[in-house]
Length: 377
Image (cartoon, rainbow, N blue to C red; front, side, top):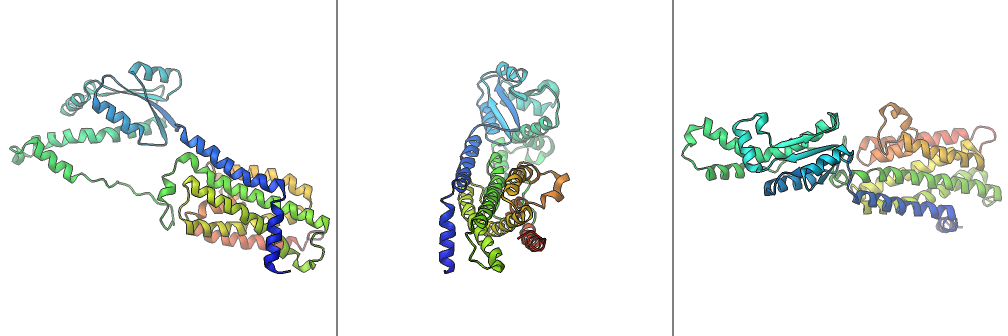
């Protein structure tokens, strides 16, 4: 029988197994579930915004704040009282209330920076670190509205040579000089670029990559159980014992690649993909690592019952230990035991891509050594 026929038959039989189909269905379920969550307004903090009059500038500031961050959820309230009630009811972490006649209030503050001329009232139940950081967002947003007045005031006070230049002319030079470039540039360590789209994706979607990685491992463990059942049924009885490892690897890699293809499509739809070339290369390396990991688990466990018992435990441990929802630095060494750690990091780091290759080699060695143990095959 040719390799092509082997591949087709091993692939076809997978789609006759209900558990394998359920694993495939799990991928779009995860994608749809997280996609729905991402469409909802959410954030680490909830800030209630309000204004004391119908000032267009105040409305502009509130709208800019609302659209400025995925990490902070801004809610625009109809009145200052409503925003303060949200804080007192525990529905908001703070309220930012813009003063009436905001433009003139900003001008008065610049002329005399004092508490009596403050133009934003901040209501908070406590002075926590997240709220302090959130106020930096407020300061950054308001700075550009204040900087124009500061600029004119400084020129009029300190540059007498420009005393005859009208304000409009000075502001024209100010606007021409203003640049849109950002002060900071963010990049992943040892990355090759191309991660901008993934980095800007909704932060709620970021665990999808790790969850898909675990689903691929789940499919590999299911394939390991199928192989044990096949051995019990004598499906590969005509295959020489020395070639059984190759047959097991074929069963594993075919199952893992089938799930990996669906996972790749899911990543593309979620907007987390860094680039097709990088994603495909990393997924192929990950498929190899997962296949060897599941083969090693199968050989160490030995029986169908043992693998079935280990499966949910491994999934739970990977969810907790691997950097999916958060990265526990204290468990960094334990993370390296499980394949999702390498996949999550290898997309952005060439070092982890190399480590994943080393990891696969170590798994192959453990698999071979485990086969030398009496009773293990």
